[in-house]
Amino acid sequence: MYRKAQEIYTESVLDRFFFNQHIDDEENILLVAHRHWVFGVKGLIFPSAVFISLWFFLWYATAPIILYSIGIGIAFTTIWWLRAFLDYYLDAWIITNKGVIDLSWHGWFHRTSSRILYSDIQGVSYEIKGIAGTLMRYGDIAVEKISTGTEVTLPGIPKPRKIQTVIMEAMEHYLHKKNLKDADTVQKILSEFVAGQLQTDDLKKLLKK
Image (cartoon, rainbow, N blue to C red):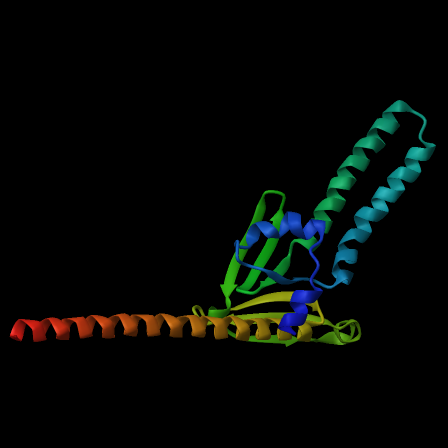
């Protein structure tokens, strides 16, 4: 699944614009997990209905004051629609080869980002509840942090079991590489220590002579 996630993920223009700024130079995005599309549609229904209605009234409007008023209404509704879309799209998890980045969008000038390295993850769990979640296959997924003992949750995510598998296998791959790197570092330190010790012993022998 880890290799498959690397092969399946294709970076879109929106992903490049919004998410690449959150990753390091040697970090690769495996998956971007959003809430189920039904939550995005739910947030867009009302602004979309207002937007369409304003265009309908604009078609029949004749007085200039009404035209200007409707035009202003369309502009504000467009901003409203964009805000609802970004509120859905930018509340996401970026799953990378190093960890999970939890993004939250609270408004035009307020965004938060927190990184959870795989070495700080105790476990990954998911929960599917309710008729809608069962039928449409969405639920809540959570990772538990070792450092704080708290959980970070992304609600309403589609196919949470698949996301759990990607995170677990990426975490296993990351920890395996980290252990190999740590083992190489320890081996190097031991080699330098032994070489230094041998040089010290040789120096003592020369002094005794």
